Image 1 (cartoon, rainbow, N blue to C red):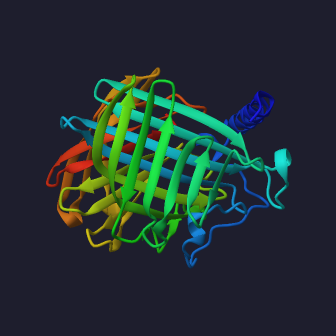
Image 2: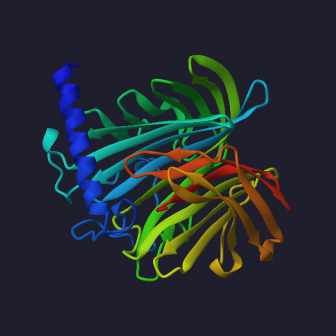
Amino acid sequence: MSADRISRRALAGGIAALTLARRAGAQGYAGLGESADGFAKVVPGKTFTFPGDHGPHPEFRIEWWYLTANLVDSRGAACGLQWTLFRQAAQPDPQREGWANQQVWMAHAAVTRTDTHRFNEVFSRGGVGQAGVVAKPFDAWIDDWELKGFDRTDDRTLAPLALKASSTDFSYALTLDADRPVVLQGDRGYSRKSERGQASYYYSQPFYRAHGTLTIDDKPVDVSGQAWMDREWSSQPLDTDQTGWDWLSLHLASGDKLMLYRLRQKDGRDTPFGNWISAAGETQMIAGGDIQMIPRATAEVAGRKLPVEWQIAIPSRSFSILCKPLNPKAWMGTGFSYWEGPISFAGTHEGVGYLELTGY
């Protein structure tokens, strides 16, 4: 591909990102509270179909394919990685062709150890083949970053998959496998975000087993562990008075999984949500009043004070843990900046997971 084609793509992506950033200022974190007139609405009662819902939903304004992995290297040292592909529509349907296409693609990749946190961000416009997602055979890509299925990939489990990303000072290549189907979050995949109707469609594959190679500063190591992928799409996932969220995905040593988040509001009220996922893949929503998420320690990162240690309790399940970060400096200094990194936890239950903090 010519340098002119690449520069045009980069310029278009950069302009689109700046436009979205300007719009975001008065509409909550990353503009996700902005009015979504003309876009499709999220309503209860959707019937999910696979492989179709593994692919893009351009009639909605925003969606993502979001993967995190808790790994250990061949010496037993903990590390983590992130791979995320975002699609945002600048305008509703109908879809236009080529460079006029209104889809903006953005991706983040990161690796984290106790001694370092590396990240990169790339952009592309839709319509020119530089980024996209195909449901069957599954393929999600932007440039040479890719999450790709095989001929034998099962639509129910979305596995196995091959994952890769690279930057100037890190890269990784993993194979992901799972033997249980994806699970619907919230109320059968309808994830309510506010009392005024904001919501998303949301499912996860929290049962990935991962193995492959992680390279930092040209030093490759073999890694293995657990991974979790979230799939979510909406047109207005936040209300205008919601400033961000604190989100956790937890792999319990028992084999159970737990997804928790709280949405923060300008008036100081927080709304918690959660799903308990059994080792067999059965899900149960957790009542917001039964979730306690209490920050216990902060870290100074990028000029911000961030709550990186959390006490989490679910009294109805006799569940009480303290979560600590692998690296408190896991700041994603991307266009829409946030904190994202691996954690470990202990208490009534033990395990590892990922913490995300936005809007700080």
